[in-house]
Amino acid sequence: KVRHLGGRVACRTMAGMISAGLGESRPDIEVVAQVEAALLNVAEELNATDSLDDVLEVPSARVRRHRQRLAWVAFGASAALVGVAAVGRFCLRSRSPAAASAADSQVLTAVAQAACVAEGQDCHVSKCCLDGGKSGLQCWAKNDFYATCVSNETCKEGVHPGETHGTYDQYGKFHLDAWSCKKLGKRSLPGCSTYDKEEDCPEARCDWFHTGKCMAKCAQFGSKDACPQTHCTWDGAKCAVDPCSASGEDCSSTKCCSGSRGAAGQQCFQKGKYWATCMDFCDSNVTQKGWSCKKLGERTRFEAPCSWAGQSCSKTHCCSNQGFSCVVKDDAYTGCVKTNQHTTWVDQPVPLPAGWEGTRLGGWKSEYQVAAAAPGAPMAGTSFFCFMAILPKSNEEALMAVAKKNNAG
Image (tube, rainbow, N blue to C red; front, side, top):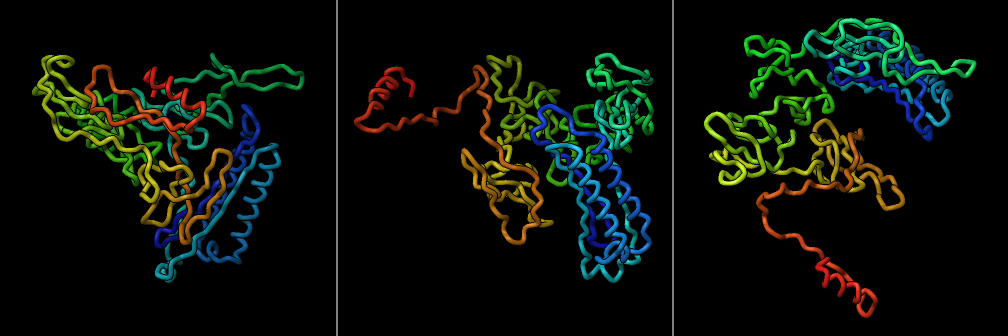
């Protein structure tokens, strides 16, 4: 993304590889790398631009050159693989009138660096690892197209134990991939969880969580997928510290249970003066002997995992109704709107309402199974019945009789 600091000017570059009918074969990683390199090059050149007019004016030769370059990269990628489409997209959003007068004096900043990744993830693009392990993580390269973040102090060149991927030579002989073990970037800092005392927990990048553990600051994670569920929750706009407790954590101080971290529908029950935790129920006479079973706070509602039609889906990024998708309308609202006429056999696209920005954040959730009540758990009562509809004076009457006899419903 390239953002203009003084106005609403944004340029997005995106390249995607969509596999169609390739089975388990891998997309051509060299093609992906070419697309990535082209996009980064465009961002670097834009960053060096002295005048916004060079970028924003439609007739600009510089913009045309960038567009042509991306178009050729995308065309080459699509030709390289049968059934694979590579898309390069370059877009500019025009300035608002209020920002136009001061635009030329502002700085255009290109942000082409990928986010750092966690242990075990591919870091060949970002060349950067998140903090972790007792001595930090290092990005070690396998080849030009794959690297991974590990805590190893050293990396041995050659084929590593357990390697399965490789290539065939001109004689049909299979060769396993060998690691170059080239260091990419610097080693990250030790993980926050390695600090056992609150006074040792580094405030600049870690928080002392209410569970008595040093944990990574939630604010450093910029997306819902990256937001760790160990102690954080995504509020729809940012990753923030979860004010409530998950199952198995002490909820004496929070007095609430976290629906986003697996404690939906649970209540904080007190064992004694120094311990309480989130559970479905508490019975001091049978299952929790010796507990006070005092309720702290309110029972957490069991929220639907996705939003309903017409509701905001900024937090869930999915919809509960078939045919509805979570779509951005504008800067202030993201909601579930109908995008498909869904049937058993086919999906027909439905145009978005006029005026919607149109970015799709997620689709609809199909049927899913809810976990059964725990053995011995108190039941709320019978309120769900099974009805059987039959055609009178047909063979279905005999079927109904058998079902009634067997209490099958």
